Figure 1 (cartoon, rainbow, N blue to C red):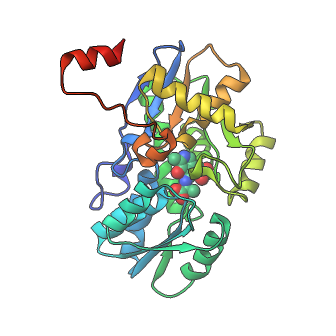
Figure 2 (cartoon, helix red, strand yellow):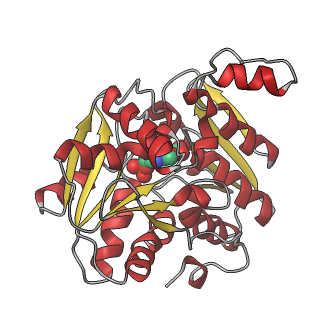
Length: 306
Ligand code: F0G
């Protein structure tokens, strides 16, 4: 079942993202969620949440965001004819994500505080008349995001041994676990979180207090989810290898599932890593080495390549 079965008129074609086999790690499959309409997995749930908000007569949707939720909410709000209000932690989100939100006409306010402060304010704003909160504490988001589990089963044609993904606020792991449970299967689910939650280089998961912490703890206690805590180096290495060895350029946070698999030494079986966001979301992560300028002659080019 695709997400379009739930939401139709607002769809931008979310879901049905490629599941490709890794070339360097046998049995590993990469679910390329960066190929969603706004470049991240958020679109699967956002289309449902914004559609329901519009149908309930909302004037505006509101969200706190490290960037991707903002870009997604802005796009679907624009399409639904609603306002989008976005609160982000000041100076802590990737520029292209803020650009996406602004391009779609969202009001983007940078809060002098953390993501957790922004979420607290959005919960308060969302309780006001006319506003609907579209963070993943909104159950419509989770309902839509579950679709990735059904899709993986359909594309793989079997139940994966392990499914790995990042753990920021915990909405996505909650959705993925619910999706597999609904499908009546129980792959091992491994999630990677940054040890340095509040300051990590992987800005999408720079979240000190996960909104779904309690539910994730329940999933862990029930033996359905394992949490792997990752150093900054482990995140960087996994991210860099995905681009260098697989051509899969994702944003830093998106590599947390692969980093978790590496840390646990999982290298056989049929496994799926969900790459949650596109690399173009955070080009600053690549760094800017000095440009290599050469004369416009073949000799100069060959000389530079020696
Ligand atoms: N990967 C990416 C690319 C993300 O943007 C996020 C969360 C996650 C993973 C973690 O997912 O929070 O459901 O555990 N981004 C949110 C945002 C916080 O505002 O865009 P989670």
